[in-house]
Length: 308
Ligand SMILES: NC(=O)c1ccc[n+]([C@@H]2O[C@H](COP(=O)([O-])OP(=O)(O)OC[C@H]3O[C@@H](n4cnc5c(N)ncnc54)[C@H](OP(=O)(O)O)[C@@H]3O)[C@@H](O)[C@H]2O)c1
Image (cartoon, rainbow, N blue to C red):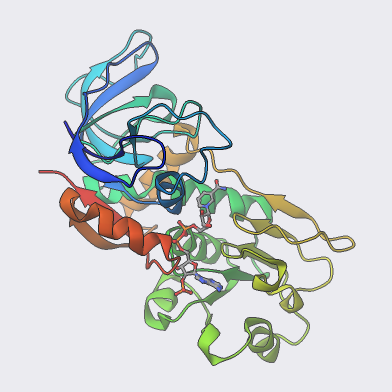
């Protein structure tokens, strides 16, 4: 089958032919119709995780997919061949399987029957980013009356987080340059970094600071707009975890896109109450370039690779 893969340690990702994976107990083999890109794919492609987790080459890239069930392994009872589904490959060792391929084996615990109102492209974009956003929103206990800052809101996770916060009645401040898109998703204020320090812009509108931060970008403490927060404001972070402040809870999120988390999000999306903001749809032949784009850290919404 064709797949975007890293043939051996230290090699560059390429599109080529690798074996179709065999389905085992507790797994589901699907014919992929769509697969989403996430920043972790760029990290795996660059070998960033090679020193942390064992890899078994060739390593196929991609964590999220939607497609049609070809075979269900022993013990799998909730889907049968022919079902339209989506799912996710967690970062469990060894790193080997990936969704940017014509076929993929997914752990049954992540496989959800795709609601009819959702396209394969939308369903593929959902698991990791929507689960991460949902878990971050839960971690800060977002509720009506709060003002929440989302740092790095333009990308995949942020596009879901802004909507989930707004749905809870929170006032959402989002960082990003695409004001119209983020406003349409539910942001009350969109702060463009190009116009000055994020914290200064936020404090100009909310002088006593925001009630919570969802942090989706940052490699150093300086990247995190801590000065915009009230002293005890909680932080949920998927990127740089800033040094704890006195009395400030910091929740490091490790997303778990299991079906009990992603199925309700898919239903919301199918009902039209959660937008799956797929901005870029490409064929597999363009996936290597798209990986480079996402690795720069300036993605817009989700990027999805579709298969004929
Ligand atoms: N722990 C987990 O389980 C988990 C799960 C999913 C994702 N993540 C991580 O969470 C982060 C977000 O994921 P994602 O999928 O949303 O990534 P993404 O789609 O690549 O989006 C990242 C966003 O960060 C923004 N950004 C770039 N430079 C910035 C800066 N200096 N300050 C603020 N924002 C900046 C970019 O938009 P602009 O440049 O236009 O502002 C971009 O939209 C990534 O680091 C990813 O690895 C972790």
